[in-house]
Image (cartoon, rainbow, N blue to C red; front, side, top):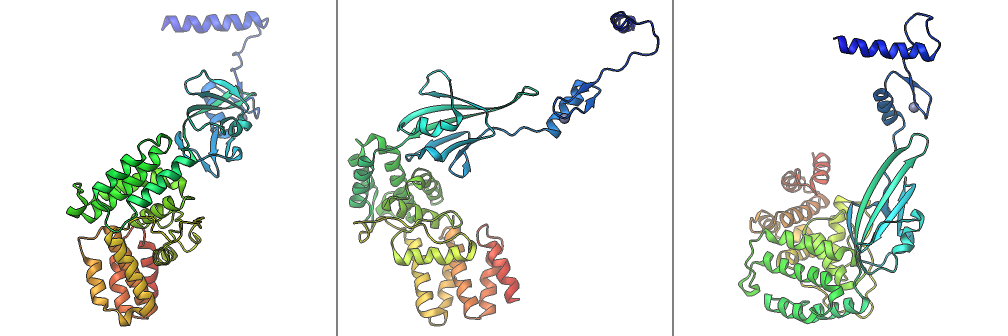
Length: 384
Ligand SMILES: [Zn+2]
């Protein structure tokens, strides 16, 4: 390897030339000190590994309330400036609706955006460490889509009038859709409400509803409704729909708003008490003027569960034909979520009446359930 040797010799020569050389002995190996703690390393790579390990830098993070924001998010309600804040961030740049990125005061991000109602906002955060020029960046894309209060109220009114009825059909969903068509800022909100009712129709599978999707499609409909409506749960109509959707999907650990229907809310409280005893009560909703009106249709199976809960609470398991309820919990035409809820209610009633055999049957069937499994396993140990 003549070439390499020549390069090494040349480097050595230069070293000795520069340092008045000729003193012999090998050249001192180069060292690479860490600028933060002073520890020395034999190579730049080692130093770089060390800096990552010993002096990690936090990724700058955007917080929305108490939660770290995802990289892409939709803001549907008016934000208080203090709700939007950053951590581990030394500088921020913002672009609104395709403008060029501009440096902004990272601490004032909230007040900078608070007046926007319909905008696309790109946010770039940087965490910069001057001592070693280390840099970590994070980008966020916000879509701000805050409907106007007036349009939301119009949509709520149209929903109550056309769809908060006993047996809505596709025709009523269409009537609702055409009624709210002109309320552009509330379009996604209205779409969420329509998705919910479609989900109810799909779940019921009735010809009367005119729904043609397969039974399982109700989940996707309800999930979409939840995405659009959860942020609006301070509105009574949205609250009822969010509560009905959460119960349907067995999302009982998430916040569930009060629906205003005493039987329904009682059922949610009982089930939530089993799987999330520390999750607290239902979120109260201001329902001035709307309290006495039916605010959303409920599918037949949900109604069955609410009725079973009420009956068990009122007369107890002994007076109920428990075999009939147990058969229902085995009924394959119910959604898996509904079967689990029914089992949980029956098991809970058996536990409370001290019927260990009855409880065990239902608890065993629930022991692998994603929502009720932990509770069932605990109760199984207790009745063993
Ligand atoms: Zn160091």
